[in-house]
Image 1 (spheres, helix red, strand yellow):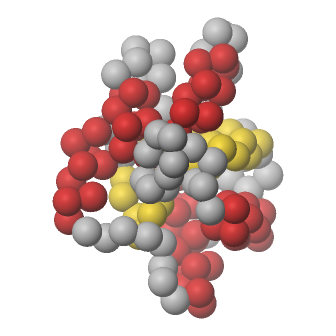
Image 2 (cartoon, helix red, strand yellow):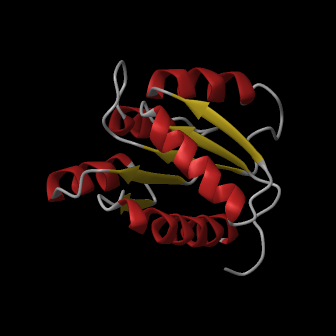
Image 3 (cartoon, rainbow, N blue to C red):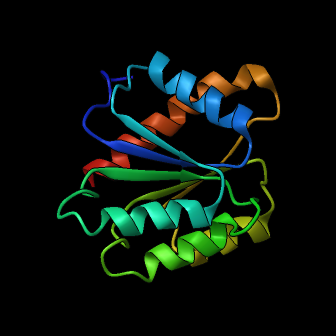
Length: 143
């Protein structure tokens, strides 16, 4: 990895607390030192985003990492709502989920996600996958 990732807020949306903790742990291990906001459903994340968009520039350096299978509002519906909002649609969205089914991948891209990455089913693969996630985040933010 090319140095730490600074000055961005990562919005993690996943109903699995264990996955949230693993993602945070690996982000810190890889040098990320920015803010991390955690939400267990798409509706919670949307509420926070709608509050933040009232503050000028508060969402300038954000990226969303979301699961797609969650209660209340799933990740695909959340992505659609974000991408249909003029003030939010520029936020990069990276889907990080256990699914690798083609129909889920297609639904995510059709909703407007920028990248789709499957969570590894083998625990030892998680660190390498998080390194890929960080690399993708850096590319999305520099675009």
